[in-house]
Image 1 (cartoon, helix red, strand yellow):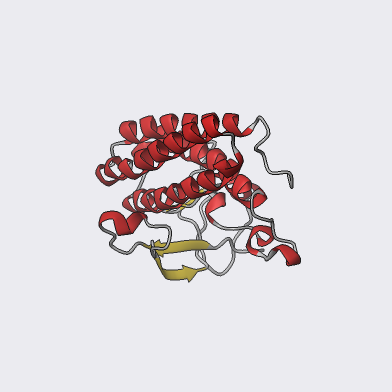
Image 2 (cartoon, helix red, strand yellow):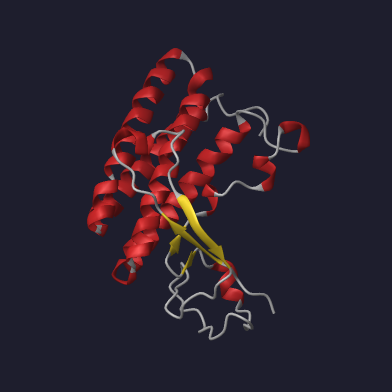
Length: 215
């Protein structure tokens, strides 16, 4: 039976504006090890996963397929590019415009899921999980660049509104690092809800003719 790998990430110390630069190295991988998920791992719908006693042989639990959180890991799916997104356009990858739009839609979906998970099981969060929330924030911050790219074809008035929205979104995501650091789940969830609303507003601006033709 297959063993489900748990990816263990170790975050580098990041300080100041460099930590939020799209070109910065946000994290280093200290190990990518096939490991069994700990017995206290929970699925997003709150169901406990079966205990796994050995790293050599496991009984496959179908609920594992639905789990977005393994032991100490919070890495929503949009942070890992799919094979289609990662490939050059000539090899089946998404072209500019379609790729940024796909990033945005995935980000909104996963961000909402993460907010709900923090709200529902914050008492169970480990230090490692909170660290990975911080990592996720840096990935989410880069979605602001996708939003800027997508706003290029907007009419002047909408483009101005979009620019202000992107600026506010990126600042709020950046400010969310503080409640993550202090494990203030209520403040974090408040930011998630506000920024999720901003993503919806931006998608609304795109809806009248600015959605990439490739989609």
